[in-house]
Image (cartoon, rainbow over all chains, first blue to last red; front, side):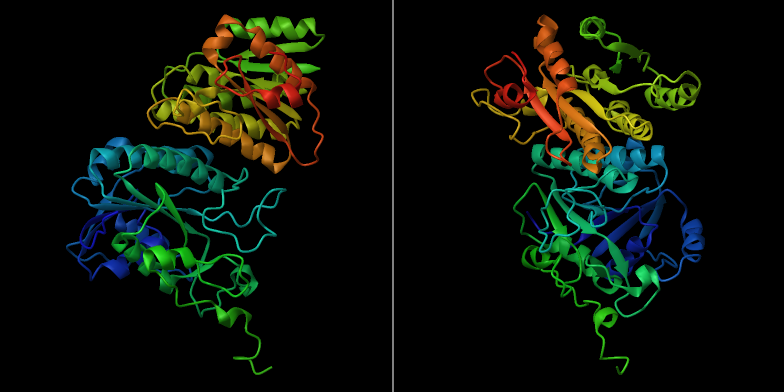
Length: 273
Length: 218
């Protein structure tokens, strides 16, 4: 696949903390961002101010722009992709049944159809690494789990609907090889050295530092290496428990996370015991 | 056994009802039609969930035969509405089945998942589905994968029967025999609750597993 080193990139679902990280990383590069969310920027800023311990957007500087659009509307997505070279899909609904299917499943379908129509050169889809389910046949007690491991979402609304969205994206990626599709799997996102009380400050095996995340998306556009129609990557820190790693992202994308959350599990370094 | 069949209006629905009643089962039909308006299918499930608390259509059922996906298999164009009917619709049904503790679902699915393989390949259930984003095979996959996760989670055992619809239109016995055997199928391996069988007399489809494990008679 050809790398994209400049051009217009559309961020769908830009109003969350991942969008904030990407904006911060991309804003001084050769990329021009079209940040898209279903809410106006002012409303997003107000919402983000209520949430602790996550990156936030405070303003958007030109030439970057903010557009209000809904991924469950094909016409709206077609419109916002106009003139774009690449797209990052961060949209998600986790809690409301009907809307979750509209955003996570229909949204994936709209994204792929619109990308064909608008000759998008690179699509970065995001989804959950299904690390939490507890049922027979999950991977909860497995180790060294590779990036391509088939998803086991279970029936929780969020992973199930995102997984169905992935099925749609895979089908399009196979049918239209000119669409360069890669998928980033994410799970727990947190600051590398800031204890925030989540998970009782125990680091889970699939954790990614906010400080590393933006670089992964930059690498996603610059990379030329790809083997599968939809190449799936673990985007996580390389933690010593060896359950998940991001070695494939290092090899194919050139992304090497700098943080492994040692503050959370090293007993002697900081507390003098 | 108290059986509920969910389907759109079709002759096959009545034939399978009669067939199963002759086998001694008590069979109820839930015919779902009129999906012309936007999201009517989705809304009809919501309405049914409310109504069912009054009339116990589902609460008084041992086993469900879900054939509604047949409606979406016949070379139908993929659009938002059909994706909703193939994902959200089964999700809501399965959530209800989980709540009502139904132990077995028989899902009528399609062999169109294999249409993209060359015609001279003989295909069994171990071959990966290759859905096309341009036809209803993608809808088949989405529907199966929604059901599969409910089976995986362990509250229900699901037998997924992949049919060739044109073939069973000509000879419904192919399907009826498979459905009857699916009712009788025992879950011999604890925790393994997702069964998939190719059901066809066409040489293109390997049906060894259906004959061996389901005891299907072609």
